Image (cartoon, rainbow, N blue to C red):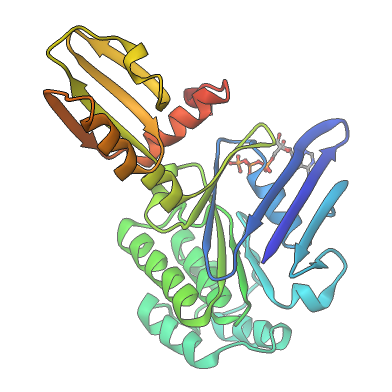
Length: 297
Ligand SMILES: Nc1ncnc2c1ncn2[C@@H]1O[C@H](COP(=O)(O)OP(=O)(O)OP(=O)(O)O)[C@@H](O)[C@H]1O
């Protein structure tokens, strides 16, 4: 497990990260969403032990990563800027990675090379942008590291490759109990693979939630009654958002779905529809609750 405890980072006087706390469970996919400059790459570099936090702790099973080669050997980062030795081909890069990562999986590497259709003898500098990213992903997946960190990794990949990379990430989590941490500007890009999502906004964590928890504890109901009513009728419920047009109300409610729906039925509505919320809608409501405007993010 990775614990982030009140992590802060300044660049000169600019507060890039402000008291970030979160827990990243083993064998999970942890997504970080946020707009340009929100602090995603900075947090990922702190998680990779490249930057030192000014304040707070980053602990991998209780051990700090910064200046700790033992922990670092189990962590790999595919940054937004990729690094390859000048003129190197994938064969040479794989040799280098195998010298750094004791558990480098050559069989998996050879499999992935075929899957991604990459020429291991070709100068990586002559690959296309998307192919260079694929090469970095293949190397990272092959390291055997328990923690794989990806910064804006889907940028520049075509939709077929994106889907394939996501599949490979899910496999490495399921088969090898690895933990994947991934950043993106786009909530939609991450919502289908993550178990846990956080939203960074101007250096702060404004949403930090388990996806199943988010999806099962927040839902929309459309409800109507014969008699006149208003919001007061639902004062026993944890209402996130309420709107009413005539005799039909649209309500976003927090709570255990079955219990809430059964209590609503007890009110004898003439219409009761329970509708799922998209993750984007959930984030909008979560942020509104905190006083932020999602559109600004
Ligand atoms: N080395 C640095 N020196 C000074 N400022 C920095 C440095 N690295 C990051 N910053 C600043 O910290 C803030 C957060 O940057 P960061 O790269 O972490 O954001 P991000 O969420 O990854 O953004 P993007 O989506 O645009 O990549 C930005 O305002 C950036 O200018």
